[in-house]
Picture 1 (cartoon, rainbow, N blue to C red):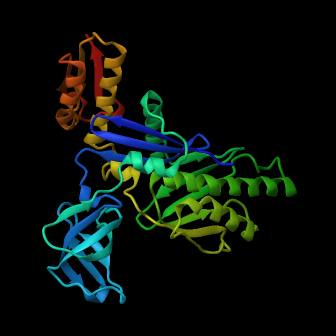
Picture 2: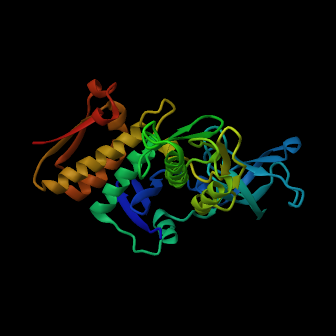
Picture 3: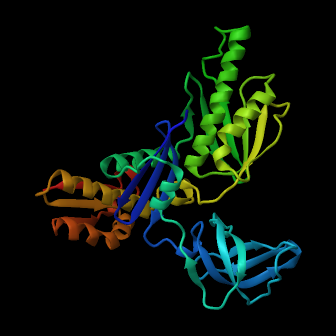
Length: 355
């Protein structure tokens, strides 16, 4: 029987929540200071209809901050007009150049405002597991591990083999590799059993990894081998992706050995949260790592003077949050900009030294 545990890491400028499935990270929730409350999943907001596209059955709604939300107009929905103030719920967060998906709740009066904020990370964790939520150093370590794993592409399967998960503009591709488990040294029935076991394990792993990454939309899984047991694999896929319902839909396994499905997108992906368009950690992402490193050193050596150097954009991103640390640990902490670190890798974009 699967077991889920929850971890809550409250840091300077960022709160992270992790849900694990049998000890492996399954979900990573990120909430940062400065996030637009009117754009968060589950928030109920008053917005103004800025533009109607009747031919596309869409309304673009100003939410007060950030990009316009998108409301799909249905025949059974009350008619809305341009300039009208309406109450909407955020059903899926904005991503890329696409605005948040909205649900109409009714008419409203100006101005734009948040009527009901989205659940915070602690509340969401409590809804996802029955076990007490763990905090402290254990939670921070788990959040760091979950963030690192969410940005990986290749994931090992139990018993051998792996899956590779890659996002494109159109879809998310999952490739199943049995590795040496069904190689030339194995033949006939044993190789077929090994391949079948790898495919079943891959479906469970793919579902966990996609939830961890926060990816969805069209997903294509390239299964290993040929002559698949379609009913068994589809049954396993439905079980694996069950937590993503409602909204998961499956196609049949094709003659090319691929399984296509759609998974609802509800949040911004972890990559969109942590990385820039070039796939590098944003200055804010690195700055929050720097602040956690300073906090760790300050706790380990209570009397030390700690001096951090960072790339200028990282130091600038960290500056608004440094007071929270100096209020806690005293004025023995400092962060200075070092232009020499600007072009270095994320792991070398800062350094914390004592003395």
